[in-house]
Image (cartoon, rainbow, N blue to C red; front, top):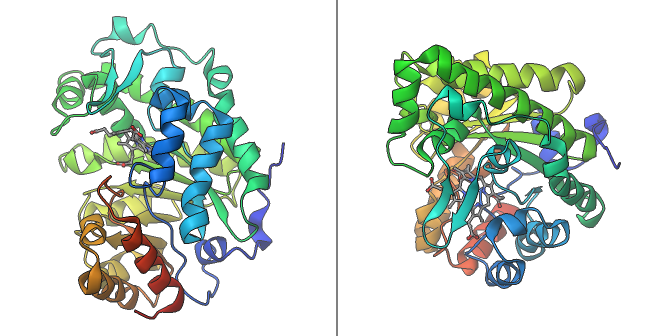
Length: 352
Ligand code: 1CP
């Protein structure tokens, strides 16, 4: 084990910003910084077999985690894996079909749910832990390592519908019709996700990010129960063992509920989607934690002066509080790597 979770003294720029210490410039990393916009990713992916085979191949998963760092020198690397390894490790059938995204055997009732269990969790996720272990020595010394998982609500939307959906209707229908039954699925996700993240930290993840991509689809009356409470439960378990490991949340599309999220879940910071105005975030969120974000990933597809101007707007708007530059959501496959290089150069030197 390379566990480096006593990171209170690390001089890595990203970790310093997360500790609210002064930094020479805003650190940056990008959601989906590894992936199909990089030709070297596509080459490794072709060698790996299926997408899940890649996630469970420590040598190749380490390689694709490092690829964007080599090109662009981000301040943090994010473990290469997927949020759907948790349902897979719980025993649900999960496949990734080219051009279709993930396909799962849907879990829509308690009978189906009873087939899932945590008995083989760590055994099935062992290759992910091995990837983290390899990364602790393979990464440049100034680059921090982010571990991650999906937040329970978002993972549940895939588990219940059996695929990605535009409106999360299947999970909502179960949650609204039978909240007690649905909460059994959510409890299993809280426990398994917390156990998974504790192991990630033990193996060398220095920061944890919880992706709640579909938080914005919850109605005002449901946000507390299915977004805030499960996140807070996971944060509590992680903080009891590793109080100094920063935890970041991404309740995408939460709007003004970002305020409740950052105040009530116990996270150290949040990722902002591209709709959140910087001046509002500076006033409403930065007093309570770090904010990451939030350039529209489509501006990086477009590139040019429009991209740089918007990056400058965000840096200026958030400069008085702890800020980590990032996208509002992940890179799309059509992103030109040269635009990522231009943005990264600008973030490093402030010149464009
Ligand atoms: O064929 C391929 O190469 C698959 C594309 C791909 C990639 C590169 C998928 C399938 N997942 C990933 C990696 C991934 N997924 C990472 C790795 C690290 C990095 O960011 O570089 C991370 C953090 C995720 C997280 C993830 N997976 C989220 C949450 C964040 C987000 O982007 O909203 C979600 C919702 C998923 C599910 C998923 N996995 C893959 C796809 C295409 C999807 C989305 C399905 C959908 O709803 O349409």
